[in-house]
Image 1 (spheres, helix red, strand yellow):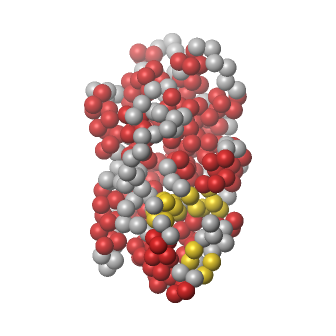
Image 2 (tube, helix red, strand yellow; image 1 turned 90 degrees about the horizontal axis):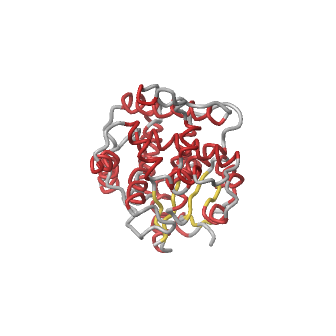
Image 3 (cartoon, helix red, strand yellow; image 1 turned 30 degrees about the vertical axis):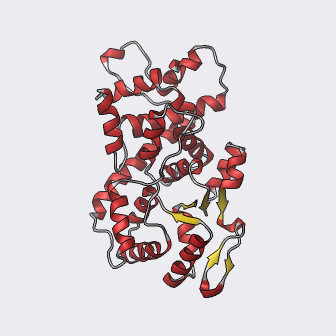
Length: 318
């Protein structure tokens, strides 16, 4: 079964002019062709941030009829198992299903389409705003500034910045020459590691909390140092570097609040058979990473032709 992932912009575009009946027929057609259309916790978080309640419920109801009852794993659920596998170039095959709270609720909503999310919208909004504010610091880093991590006495006399953390990476200290572009990518990657992995800035962070509990490391600063010393591959391989490249791809011009979501969506490129988007930033990602994987996995909706089948079913050409 192929997994086709729709990030939020693609979902909004696909909905235009289509009914719930179209969604049901399309879902059946795709399953018949051996394709499962999936969402992720990231997509749902973004949908739930829709301020217009009527529009929000319309999107959720459409999704309940079109997409699988299984969500893809959250970013944390992808990152932690990969680390614990030893950060291999080729991951050990695993079931791509989320066990987060939102995933369990989503199954109930697909099984009973009369239900919807019961949530404190303002609480969710305040949490997401906190995450999005983090990207302002990343925007500053990209624009040739730096980020001070700590003024702790333990590090007195040390200019403890993201740039110096990059210099402390074992492969850099060993003499590997890294270009200006690589240095920037590593700095942004480290920044995401600091917040998501080390400071647990995730809407559902239980898997991250358990990771650190098993290692007995509570301090965020100690976690950062642990990553630099014991897990340096995290900086230049895997989910965080993909987030870094997506952030850099849209760094021209003013800071965008959507960069946090876009960077999280980019993590899924490695794990799905196809990812659909209407966001031009994914085109920019192709320029930052001119890798074949992006050409056959990332599909912008204006590059895709949908064909009508009987009973209003929609399919995508092979």
